[in-house]
Image 1 (cartoon, rainbow, N blue to C red):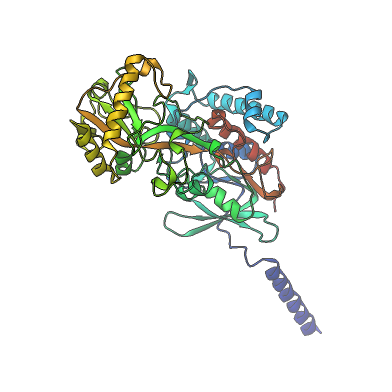
Image 2 (cartoon, rainbow, N blue to C red):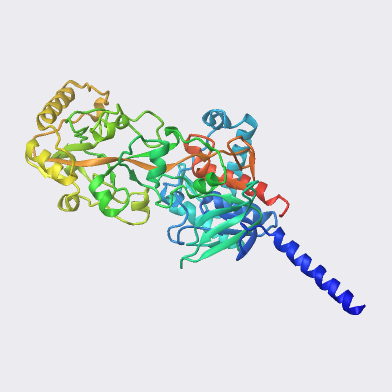
Length: 497
């Protein structure tokens, strides 16, 4: 009898083991780590999401793509700009993506987070953070480290682990610095705070530019759309991927940018004569060179497109070049010297010379005594078809005539109308430059990531540039802080799996 009972018990135990094995789905990995809330990305949005979870008493883990020196995404490459906007401006800019109540909540949360930042050492003067973007982000890092929240650097998330039927998110698959996989279980949920996709030329082409134009990136190279792509793979809907979500930042020298691997900005003169023009391959001007395009939502003249081939894939004002004279060169640096914005400046990649001579010697700017020689040297430098020299001469003559008359064909202010003198002449191919993108994932009022039908994907949230709901500057640093806090609060209040 005892043997029979023992056999029955053994069979029951075996059945329990088999049942347990059957309950563990084949797609579920063996977890290496776990936390209640797993935050992907350690910029301001990710930091505030982690802070919210921590303050709600749940365990929190941040996984970050970059090493500690280059973490933070767009924040440390920015000028740390903080400017108060009204609730009405936030609501209007969202263009239907926010109710007035949600705009008010966003406004209030932004100010709460800024107060917390100030309490932790942030100083703001004339709407600019002390130490610019690096100073702003240093406050974030110090505060989060002071809480004891763990950050795994050099550990990019590469996949969301989700139920293939319900899309419910259980965690993330990461890749460690040594190439090995790390599976992190999220007991309550995941908050994606991975930034934009400005460094992903494939996404920029798909979302914005037919037959990709060449552009420079002044922001972080980690903006490759990782969170957007991972979420899209499990059914997330996209929103806000129009050209209104591109944040422009002027122009950069192509040769210098290619050589240094990040945007090296073209700068107009701060004090001296602005004796320069922008021209296309035909040697013709096409815009007011003083048009301020930083964060502008206007239609950009250099993006004029008619589909004509083979003219630079249909962008008939590209490639574009800057032409200027000796007086402008002598007036001061025409590149970023002791500057306070952009990856190259904030990470000391390159500091422009005071007299521009080093850059002329490096071939970043070409010099010639005549227009014919200038055109020849530009073609050799850029590898493009040469500018029409005769048209260029006519363009310069027409521009100079306008300077003399105090009028300009493209509406350039008389204050900036300085004629181009006789040779020597200077020129370079320049590129339109982007700092970051805003928008991508479709979201709910609490940072929920929605599918194409507008339904929340269970246990998946997002914050920051991966899905900002508005189109104005406020949704850079301030918006990242606020949306991070909101998403972290909501995710941390869920029941565990």
